Image (cartoon, rainbow, N blue to C red):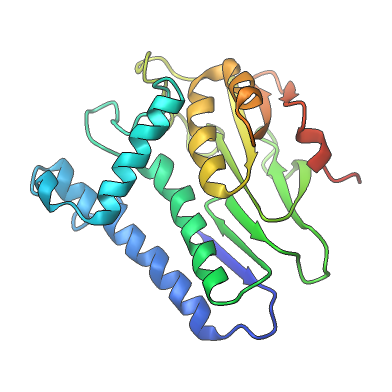
Length: 240
C-alpha cells in the first residue's frame, strides 16, 4: 500500500525517514499474508509453533483478542477460510508505532498516511491543524468532508475500493451492502483503525457503536448516499 510520511520540523534528516520506512518494511515482512516468507504465512501453513512466535506476533494476537472482546466478537482475525489475517489491526498499530518512533527522534510535527489511515501530530507547514479529506464512495475524485486534526488518528473502512473484503463474523457468507463507507476519528490511528473495522462489520449499527465508545467519533455513508455522523464529529469538520 502507498505510505506517505511528512515531517515539518526543520531539523529532520534523511536518516529519520529511512528508519521509519525500514520499520514499515519489517512489519510487512512479518505480517503480510501475501508473502510466502512472512511469519503469519508460515503460521497459517503450520510451519511455526506458538512457542516460536515472535514477540510482536504474540502482542498482535493478544491485542486482537482484546479488540474482539471489546466489540462483542465483531472484530475477528480469523478469515472466512479459517486462516489468520491480523491486517485489520496491524495497519493502525504499525502507523501508531511509526509515529512513536518519530516522537522519540524529537519530531514535533508530522503526518503519516498508510493506505488511507492517518496519524497526525502537531501542526502542518503553515502552522495550522492537519487537514484530512474523506473520499466520496460513489464519486472517486470528490471529497465529501474535510476534517482538521491535531495529535489524533483517523481511519476509514469501506467496500467502494477493495470490494467485499470485510465481513460480519456472525454472518460470514452475507455481503455487507447496507453501508459503503465508515470513517472514525480516535485519540490515535491504532484506536481508530481497530474499531472502524469492527464497526463496519456491524453494518448500520456500527455508527451507534462508535457513538457509545469513549474517545471516538464517526461518519458513515450508506448505500443510498445518506450520511450519519456521531454527535461530536461535526466539531472536526472544516468549514469551507
